[in-house]
Image (cartoon, rainbow, N blue to C red; front, side, top):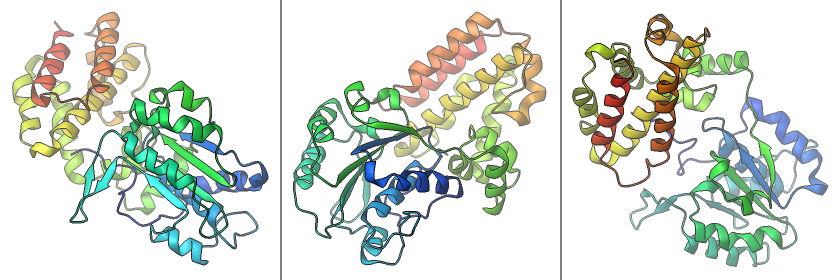
Length: 345
């Protein structure tokens, strides 16, 4: 089971997360010099979409508080919460079909950016501001990104663009250079664990480690079915001498066809985290992501040479970048698992 995206595109606006409040206040305190293009970047699961939409709501709010954060009560705030504000555009790699169903569309195509550019030129309905949020910015194809350049350079007055990037390195440099970049706030470990415990997550410390410190990703990973599938994969990786690449990769094909690409991505993520922890153990450190498998990682690390391990890890990174391409997920996983097993021969 793959982790949920940061937020369901059908969901109503979520409130600021506890670790985002100080950042929002700091930004709104300098509203007079608010950048016309802001890029929020950081790993998935930090709540960047939630922060971006709340910043948009604050810019559009008609009676903001003394700290600049949206009141939540005015007409504009209600329109934003309902997803119906005429001065807010949310561009995501999703489209709504004739039946009202959300369909994935990867990448964000130039037609949607052209429609956004036309919208930017219109007069504000509520007279407060106009805000466009693009999530994630790296989903724009090359034509769409190029089409957005002029708007980023010369937006109309009181028009703001907020770009969210999970992988800012994949956003064209021409776009990045025209935005004020800001790293999305991360909660301290203790605060994140406390928040997860409030959400009902069992063993929040271990799950947060699995998620690389991203609380919203940890919420998805805490699901029992997720943990059960992870245990199957990691127990197999912990015993490379008996690992069957064919049998383990067959679990990919056991998923519904429309979920196999997601399963492939997750298998690569598990392998990436596992091999990174092997490297840490080999250098005398403790595992960062798979703390519950520390007893297995130590002895395994003594059996693998560092250079082949690093090369294999780089191969996984290259393969992770190709997940969106039309691959045969089961065959890709088989090849990766064969490569993993060879590390120990």
